[in-house]
Length: 440
Image (cartoon, rainbow, N blue to C red; front, side):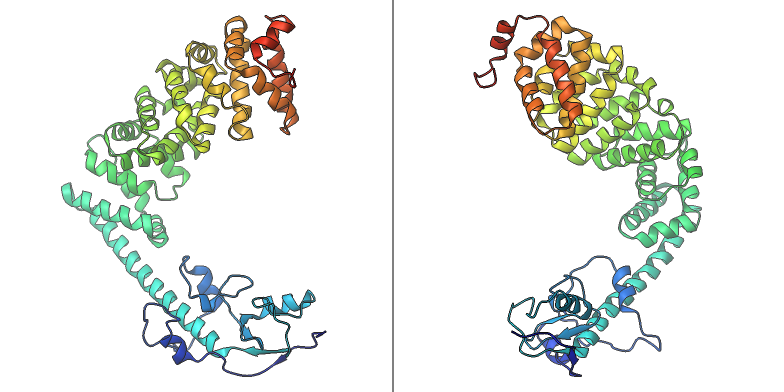
């Protein structure tokens, strides 16, 4: 049996640079690789960290860590690894090549300096190109910000559109806008005489920036919020989503009470957005904002009064798990008020739709569904408990009790089961539940 000893290193050029380029290691025919980058050599680790994720040639990737190699070494089997990774492999007592699983007949590790040079050259090329693009982006952003101080009309719309497109793609652009006072300048363009076109682009820019507390407080002025709501109700789907996300950012980022933001017009607009199944991103954005708004108790009755409960209940069957949890969370918040419980009770689809969710989606969905059912059955036990039993609630509750769910869910299920059985004798309750002999 081969026993690893102190690893010997052979100073050798394993991968020929010219052959690697000819074989397409760089991909896409990058041509001649520049190896000189001034007197100061770029740090490979720093370049990899700063570069955005990209497709890296497989020959640069260590088969063990699946990360680009900094110090590649080659074994006698011809396989190349990052030095630290292969040393760790050997330290665990392995005497084989990790890729081929061949037993090693030679303990030497050859530094693959040509591959190392190739890796450094490739990343340097990408890094310098990124730096050049960043400088170009910074210059263009500064130019647009200066122009926005002077131009009006369609020229202003075009400048804002270009700025929106740039900040969506480049982190450098976002930073440049913030550092050059761009947030205040762009926010000032929202006013009583702002056109729909300008407002759409301004919101599209702002939603991509990291807003500070002062900026958010400024944007929460009633006139600006009113304009955002108008644009949300009238804009394209992209604009609706941007408005929704921006308003949520403003509410969550400040101590400003959401009831001062949540106008009836906003609530109606959000309901329209979450019912538009053609645009899933809009549904998620709308539900997230509604959840944030409804977390403030004074808003809940207003939301109930615009007919939100039956509209949300009807959405339940066609939602994915993410949206389902959001809808149930909103309905649970609404069930904390008498008006909300009454609306849930009066909606004929509430009990059937919610009962079906027990033990069907996530445990969180089951917990929220149980909370809603408990609220309305407790609110009107004689009417709702019998409807719930007819919808198959008892069998579902027994499944929850017998499952591996957390004890709180089991306890709530047992309490709800007891509540539902109060109006029946044991025999009738069992027959109404349509339970099998085993469950009985």
